[in-house]
Image (cartoon, rainbow, N blue to C red; front, side, top):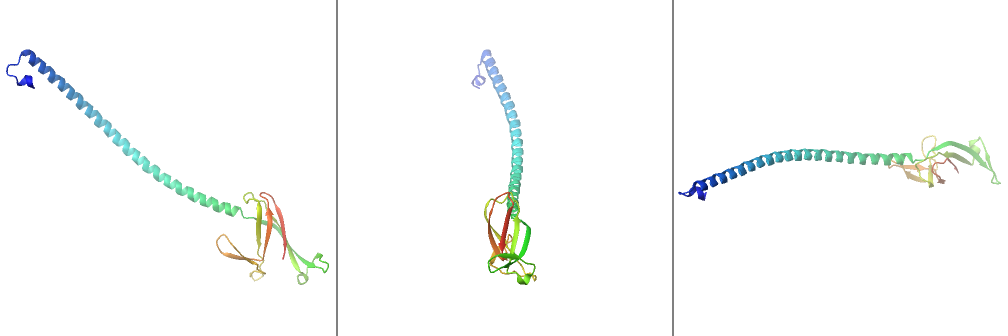
Length: 184
């Protein structure tokens, strides 16, 4: 600028000024090209950022859905394990017995003469129920559906109470069939 403002600038000084102007114009062109490149990269990064935000939202929604499904599955699994751990009695037999004065027990077919009933059954194999002491609740009902000789109540899965006639303690072993009997 100082060379161009000189009134008596020499030819050589003017050549030098033109060279400097050309150099500055080249730098300006280079900077404009760099700005255009950076704008293009910025646009690509903005698009990539929007895409990542969309993917993150989708993954967050999927994660929430999967967490809900996992919770539901765990609840259902616990319910199924609870139901599957229920012990099942089979081969149930009821025998009427007369107790003699000597204490000897004799079978009878006459209900009026029976002093007690001996109820026997097998507790079936269950691979889910852990081994240990188990209480078996026996519910004997009269022909009209009322409980006979109730000793107490126990809670059913639905939360209601059920009267039982007798409770028997057994030492259950997981995965094995166990005979059980009691007098009533």
